[in-house]
Image: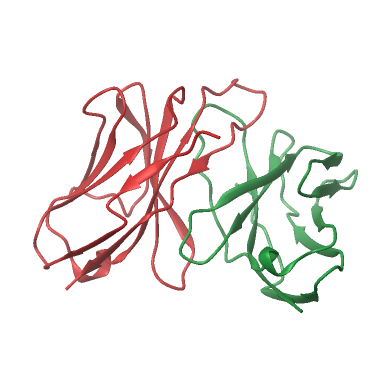
Length: 111
Length: 118
């Protein structure tokens, strides 16, 4: 499984766009990229997943360049409730793959 | 929206005691998982379960741990003789049947059971 590297922490203010970049230099051809969010004392929650280019859902956008060695999670107009830890994970597709979590990025949104 | 549920939310036990953590996965899901998170540390994979058998387990999941799907809805994690270092938040997760070679089915996590071993 490809190792991921992301910033330990980030700070932002309400209403700003937040971009969290993750590097995964050893990503394999069949690997996908997924992002999870975790609030204190809660289980991780799926945010978005992609293979290449751009993916957008109602919560976030995921940008993946052509070489796929990095990805950027973009959260538009964050609010205080977006304060959480964000995990970037790389995995092989299949029926029952384990998720390997790193330390994640601790995002603090300030008023 | 369907969700994974876990009971109890908190469990305090004495070292050496057996504990059973319970999970009800989302009803049409076929793949089940247990993860744990020691306070302030990463979420760690313990075990995956499909078709009534363990698919994969980590080094953490030693002989003291076992999993079971006793009926059509529950999925349990048993720790036979708890140690102090078993104190952690335990998360159950489930996912639908995967399309092999296509994409990772999203894993949905429960709220967790906080286990404290004294």
